[in-house]
Length: 121
Length: 204
Image (cartoon, rainbow over all chains, first blue to last red; front, top):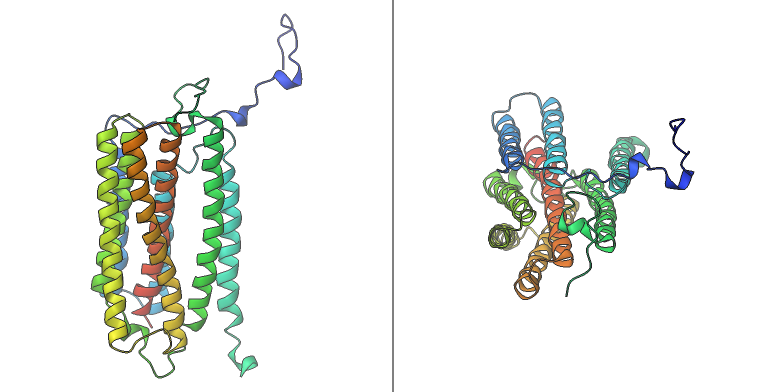
């Protein structure tokens, strides 16, 4: 929208919000990366400890350690891989989302379809 | 060799400063997207064939958690050090950048050496990928990841040579940044291998 006293901008000249570059600003010491490292170590030892101690029954334990792995993957992407950084739109997020959708479908459906053992043999 | 920089946007890191080079970073993300699909296929394969022992060892007796945990710690630490290398690069601290890249490379080499020595010990016991569907899918999945790490080490070596010869410019900065993306991505894949294959193997 334009102010009445200013001439209206041609649509081509209007700044496009989503095209603005965004880069993460680290402080003088890489605290973000250090906490990311500490966090990933904590998640790894939590998963390892839970399995070594047989904390829960197998199915619940598998769900727990898968959850910890997903949290750690998110941590790697967010803290270390600068996921949102781009000069324009972050196309990589759309690409990764699609890949994740296909990956979960591929693995999940493979496991699901193999549950019908009676139909195969 | 250096490219003209377009610093019309305030606070732009060097690896994004040239338009063409910044497009290559997006392109590298698209390569990682396809790599996600390769590993997803191998994980699906493993999930399906995990139970096919065929008279060979089962996952619980086959896996050694000690070396696997050690490998995990090596990769996690190397992921941190390559992150520090990028952090130093964005401050123009080229000596720290090179040093952290070298540490990353050595940690990666230690990972590959540990993994290969594990594989050699398995094969010496007769546990090859010919033995069972479980071992076929295990070696296919973990071996593909190990080959990726090996390739990453070669990439880092080539990068060290280029950085020493050409210094830090828009091109070498972009190459180091894409290397860091590749390395973190391999760490993510390993986290799932450690969780699903090694820890999950102890739950069966």
